[in-house]
Length: 298
Image (cartoon, rainbow, N blue to C red; front, top):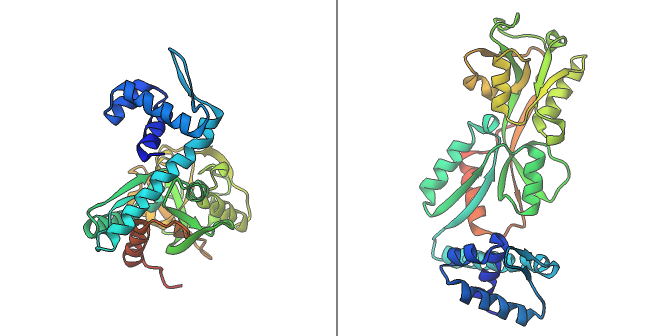
């Protein structure tokens, strides 16, 4: 079995169209069809159901696809390892983050990686809540994720990179918007905007804990995944929100950030990755992160 046979199979499996797969591989369609037939003969089973109008994977094709992809992933890891012995770091690293919550931490990391390793490509995936980020790390869909700590028990490893107290994001015309600090209990009658419970957001969990500790359960009027949109909705007067203090510098013009009095509730930010990920480039990026995003003193 030749690797080009696997490459042809993956292309057809992803395109489900021989013409598009041939164009992707820069081949004529006839040689591509012959290659697929050779592979099927080698395996002793059909990988595709073909008709004049459609192409679909057979159950055998579905079963074979992840193993074919793994061959190319292992080859890429081998290339990375070989070049790493010459001091060359190259490859791709996918990073998950949540915009408003990571706007101070992501740029220093990406700039440092680009300067240190110009041959490394960073794939940045926004809107990734903590639970989603951990799941995608476990499945191999991400290499590194910014998460809220602590996370549930998992093979994913984490490191603390930031610690910010929660405060209140209020519309500019809110009665308490001009105060230097407020008690969280003062917002007991307000409607709250939060990230969805189902998203597994560390921010949502902490906000609920803080409100309960202040003696009330918040009345949620809107749930939205994007923290930037939470701030936008606050500015329109839809409700109030609890957010880490780092967002104070990016508040919309019609909203304000007001610190909370009393015992602070901290949001702890972390980096997460799968320790067993063998990619040298991922561990090179993590080494850079340890320099530019050190663990703060407790």
